[in-house]
Image (tube, rainbow, N blue to C red):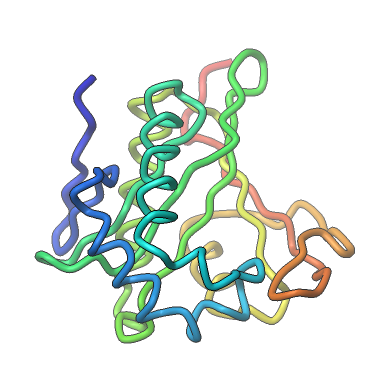
Length: 183
């Protein structure tokens, strides 16, 4: 099965392959402290090359089965982030969840917006999804601004929604419906 490669003005989005394991590990290690406050608590073995290879294998299985579209984000030859559409549900729902992260030194350059927009175009236009849901911790003002800029609308507020960095954290629930979705 050929994997899509999404090109934007500055970025390339693609599904990681096993040969990308060192780049993926490097991205995770370089951004461990930066991403810690927004992610689940990570044990040291999460960052091992073996764990990276296992997750890449899972990412490929998700893509092949259609249950997820786990894109890595590249600026030239450097992995700088992720844009992952997961928990894909077909049938009457046609929806998924969106998760994303970007390297600390790439924040504030509209790179994540560029990557997420490319991913949204793919899941709406190529995969035929109707709804993408994205949730964020209330004090993550960058995520709030990013999602707003892409047209996501707040749909709710979930108390103690996810265990982030060792604590149950509330989340703002947002969603974006495909433009011009047929009835």
